Image (cartoon, rainbow, N blue to C red):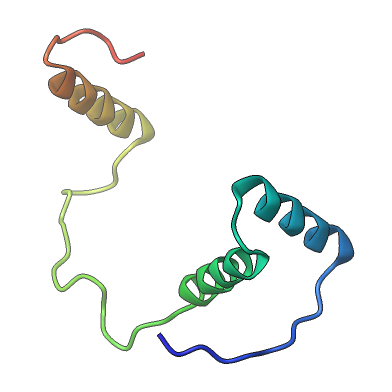
Amino acid sequence: MAMKRTTVMVDEEDLRLVKLAAEREGRPEAELIRRAFHLVAMSTRTWDEPFFEETLDLGGPVRENEIRQGVDDAVNRRRGSGEDAA
């Protein structure tokens, strides 16, 4: 991946926290800053085409309790025990 140098003005406290994190993790500050920059770039990215080609018809609105029950059922199936997930 080609890299390009840039200058960014940052809040002093944010920079202090980045320096502490880099020291704690034993990694260069620049690596942490590049990672943060990439996260921002990806979170604001847009695509010309839809992400999904097909839609999923759930037959109508899905209520919160139905979602919770579905998650509980899936957790119980994964555990293989049938016990409550809560």
